[in-house]
Image (cartoon, rainbow, N blue to C red; front, top):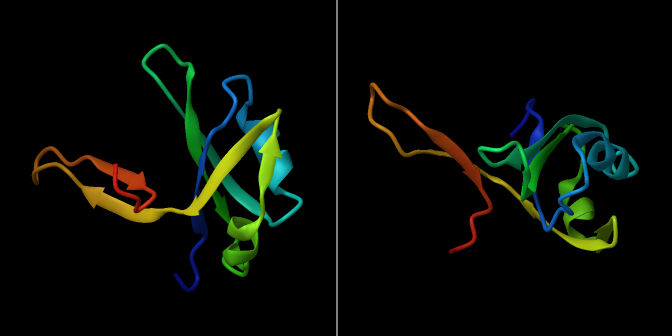
Length: 101
């Protein structure tokens, strides 16, 4: 991923945690370039999301830590690149953790 931000999956996010709070927490480890908490159709947190850190960040250091935010332990993993689930005219991509369901 040379020259590109690195994307990290963050699971177990408290439903009351917002993107700003998540960014502030992970800023102690790296320069955060993007925070995206996944929401349902009603705009409520689904309890997971993604952060992107600057290209010069050693993400292994972040992933190996135990993270607790808003009294919930977070599940932090390197995100897998998006997979195309659509057809040429109807493309949908999703980032994942690489873990089997």
